[in-house]
Length: 210
Image (cartoon, rainbow, N blue to C red):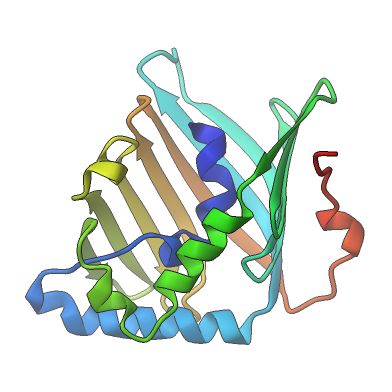
């Protein structure tokens, strides 16, 4: 369950439908427009990520440190260095998850990602997607915060809620909190260190099933 969420955290705002109370419609429209502009302006990005994972089964929170690089929403790499090394790579169609022992699991998820992106990027996507989630939006001096709560059964089976925080200046992701039905809560703190830089092709190389 946790691994399933990881490749989506960079584009989570675009991959989940939203709905707001009437008094927040203007704020939603402003945020939605800003995110679309940011996607066009920033084609690549790299930075650091800190995940704080909690669960009723854990004696204390687990804190994982790593780095990431992304190119659009089709190529993505996340590598954890501590406490347990792990590398996650997504390239158009395939997701690879490599653990400390060197074992790599391969998943074909490209069609699902493209289907979601196509649906959510249309001009009328906001109105069309006001079915699956309820969201509470807040605006502070530094950021936008949105809390997503599932309405449809498909999402309710997997997710309790999700909180997205965006930098108010450039609409880039600052943090993502995912609270899953598995009982695990993960908060990803994002520190973007570079934008629109050339990324080596090797960064996104994945294994594909033969």
